[in-house]
Image (cartoon, rainbow, N blue to C red; front, side, top):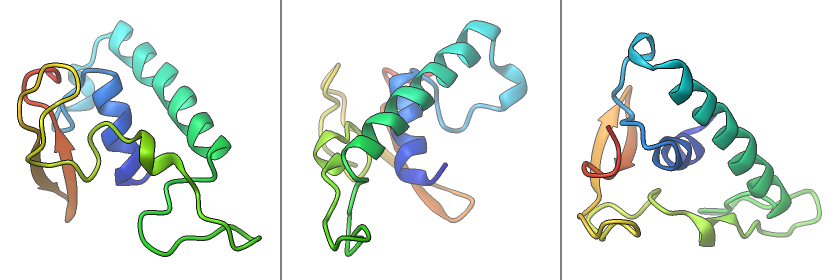
Length: 103
């Protein structure tokens, strides 16, 4: 799962992206799994995110980027609690999260 969808899945699951997997409880894992299926299915239906120049085989852009809740929104208010979203680098990739909603 790329960082776009990982950000969105962690946010939907209320999980900090820095959490160590072994600290996740069974209910949290089930919630992450549910959100993986839901978010990736919606993204596929929308043709992907098309952040820069991605096009499908027919030359069309995807529209899922309009549904992003955190990815690419560092410094903007969280849609849930209005806390400003933070951006960190994990393994060389940018990650955006809400320090209030995600634990």
